[in-house]
Image (cartoon, rainbow, N blue to C red; front, side, top):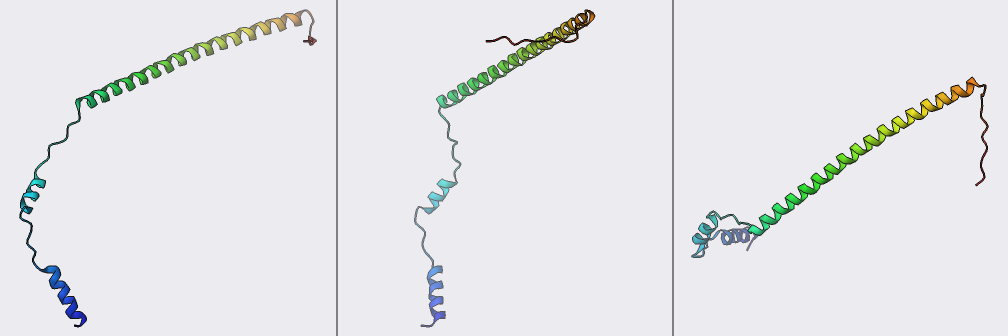
Length: 113
């Protein structure tokens, strides 16, 4: 048998008619039917809702807290600016008074600990 005869026999075997199983049509139709979507259990939906509300609440509380901190930081900044302005004016007046009485420099002494 030459290689062409062997190839010819293989092709005949591959393309010979095979009877389908008797329930093939029923199986195909069963698979083609639309399937009902699976429903999640109600408790799972409720749990998801509770988690969403809890997450939103925590996020809101953190946002609120950051706003309070920002306001407090602004209040402290304004107090610091006012304190520095008062200190600057007081030092300037003190310097003017010292110069008016002839004091140009002040010697500082370290205090032992």
